[in-house]
Image: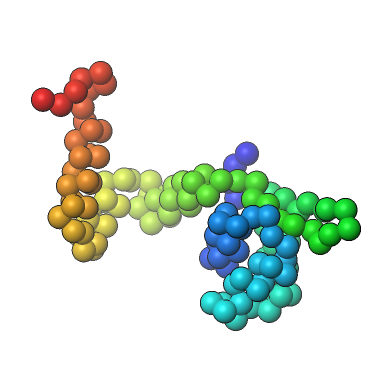
Length: 131
């Protein structure tokens, strides 16, 4: 299944569900209201969109309110969003993206070492360990 495009508002809803699912619409609204100011109807609209996109599943429980459960893993959605961003902003070219973020980010020395290690591993021939 191709990962659908998820809006910023939908991401907010998904983050809550990835952390705490299953949740009812009312529970999601109560959880998000302090940070977003959204009314329950707004949350219900976002949930319906996410179900229609195939990102969430709505489950009916006998005698209980419908609960919402993510169908897709967060990592899969992050990967798809990253690929979409790379295509839109950098025409699919990884190097300009990495250069941009390396120049703009205020990386700690530890983060620089970690990034360097990742890049070093990417150029190691398979089955060869560094000296």
